[in-house]
Image (cartoon, rainbow, N blue to C red; front, top):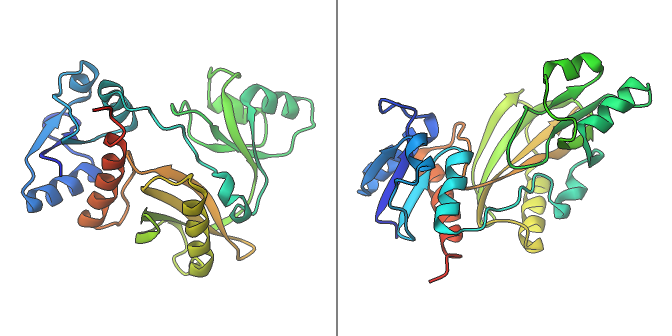
Length: 251
């Protein structure tokens, strides 16, 4: 049981939706709440321990893990165990390689996004050299995930603890294009059985123009965006994942 909760503020007590949900739920549960700024966590001014919960953006969470000597999890956007549910070709490359292929006329239009923890640009389609101008001077050595372009009719975030679905939130597309829950449940079971899945996470699935339910990407549960999910469910997801992470701290 965590004795206090540290929530990141944007300044002057302003909170993102995620921290607003957490504050409301921790107040209901009677857990003391303390707000902090990015500057304070960067300066390591928070008294973090195994008994404290913390929430914030990805950078803040990574600093907290370093302070507590928790190994930062490697990103696993496309788990191997879920390859049968991707329904498109996905691999790794670099921005430079994609740019050269387009320049030489050998490359097909492709979707690419950063493959490392720090997101230097937002995932996007690359169809011509004009698209590279949009990302400016980002290093062409940047490793990326790349996939063939597909058409999504709808995309949903699925919040999970263990194999239990806590919430399914539409974040883009047509709400009439519903996920096939039988496919979703098989995917979650395969992910859990593989040993790749954290105890709590968000995972995005969508409906393709072919009608297939497919994996969009997986997201770790320690710094997870909130859509329509209710406060108690969102809090339980983050608490479960943070508890799993602090349990790795050497006593």
